[in-house]
Image (cartoon, rainbow, N blue to C red; front, top):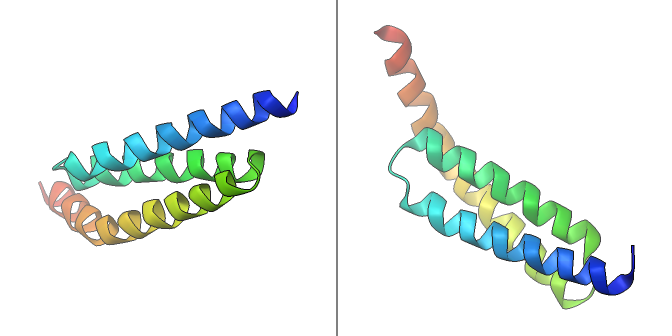
Length: 87
């Protein structure tokens, strides 16, 4: 893959990851938020592996943010699943 295509792919993954983080924060369901954050983290990880220089720094920041929000949503997700199982 040519270097310019790698950079473009990395930028696209960064935008995708950032959009998923924003969308995930707007989702009221803990399961939806968790799923959105996990996909955002995977996109940021791919951008981290493909990117270089500043793109890697931005990817690392988005990865940490997505993982932090996912960790924050997990207890709510687990409680929601326990309520679901009791039905």
